[in-house]
Structure formats: C-alpha cells, structure tokens
Image (cartoon, rainbow, N blue to C red; front, side, top):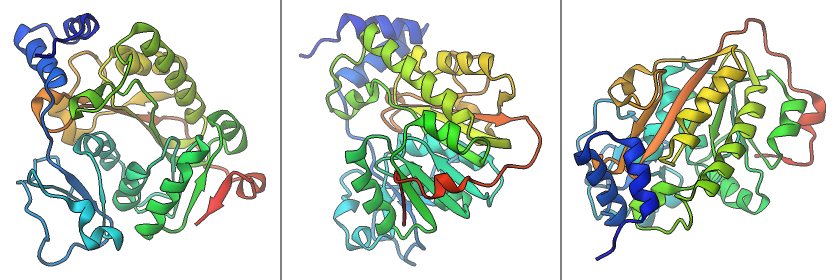
Length: 316
C-alpha cells in the first residue's frame, strides 16, 4: 500500500486543523479516484445532449456540463467540430470568478493561456471584442492556436511574449487579465499523474517567486477599473493565499473582491475573498482562485502599434 510522504503530511497539517480533513485530503492524494469529465460548450448545444450528465451544482456555469463517469467526450465528432472543449471541473471552478464581471468586455488578456481552456471560457462567458492569449513557452503555442481555431474563436490573437515586456508594451490597456499561474502542480497527484518534487519547499518557493513576478507584471496591463484573476492548481499556501497577500501589499490600488456564487468556498486560510476546492470534496483535483479589482479611475489607452505588429503576436 502506498504511504504518504512526510512532506505531504506536513502540508496537510498546515492546511487543516481537523484530523478528519487532513486524513481525507491525504487519502485523495495517495489513492486518487476518477473525477467526472467536464465540457465547456463553445457553440450552441444540440437540442438533445449526446452525453449522460450529472445534475448541475448551484454555482455551475450554464455553458458547462459535468458528465457521468466513463463518458469520453473527446472522442465525439462534436469535439472535433469545435462545439465544446474538454475541461477539468477544477479549472471551471477557478475561472468561474470571471462570472462576477459584467459583460461584455472590450478585451480579455490571458497571460498563461496554453492549452486554451480558460481562454475559451473567458470568450464564452464575457463575450470580449478581442481575446489575447499569451503563452511564453513557444512549443506550447501550437496546441493553443489549434484549440482556439477549432472552437472558432475570433477576433483573437495568440502571443508568445514574456510578461515583463508586455507590461512595458501595453500598460493599462486590458479590462480583464487572467493569470493561471505556473505552479508545482500538486493537484496532478489527485488525478493519478506525476508531479515530482511538488511538495518540496525549494520547489514551492521557486514557483511562488515566479508567480509573484508574473502577477506583478500582469497587474500593469489592467485598465483603470479593470479586473485581474489569479488562479493555480496547487495546494500550498505559499503559491496561493501568500502570493495574494504579497500582491495586495505591493499594489494597493487593487482589492480582492467577493465572488458571490463561490461564497461557500471561501478559503479558511485567508481573511480576504479567495476561493478553494479540495480533492477530497470530489468535485475536482483542487483549485485556488481570487479576483482583484483595480480601483484606479480613467480611460484605458489604445494598444500601441508596436505591439499590434510585434513578431510574437499571431492574429487568428
């Protein structure tokens, strides 16, 4: 029988005060069970769903179906035709913070976009006039482009530019910016996948520092009165609540805002609005999300011509 590592046990003690919660959390990591598959409808649903679905949760977006165990939506012809995108339900939970934003919006910028699921959700949910999906790792842009094209997203552009030059090129131009931050990937274990070293403090701190850098640069893209969504698939405080605390201290023009439909998922590890689901609650492998509002006032500037013609920007 597989035994939990000491680092996992130590993390569980930091996350939960109750022994029953600690034990259930560790069990979900050490002995993963399948989660319900999930799809995001990018085009109108057929009158009769081709899949067996679960009853929707109260907060579940209308554009999302949670399917019965054993369904294989990726093999259905409607998938290839771009009617829907297969998305983990934890990802749906995290990106659903966008539903607290009034639509439509002028622009959405997804800073860490590949393979494209959260960009697609933003396109469906917020109906932006322009979707900008960035992926700094060049080899990951091909599947991102393929998914956006398959689901017929336009107007849109795919970028492969680091967050720092973006902060210099298009400051204050985007009403909505999303950061699905690179993380230790701890929740991969709850899916039965591998994530070597994900609980080691060195790896956690390395990722937390990278997240702070990306979040700080991304904040500079947010237009006055705009929103910045931050999310990860990690469990550690250092990559989630502590990153948010660091951010709010250094960017006082931003405030964490309440997302009403997720109020029952408020993180017990923070005194500001932010939200979590845990693997032992059986909705998904786990996720963290927070939504920040830029309280500055004014009108966003137009995007610089140098950006529109940047070699790292591919228009779809």
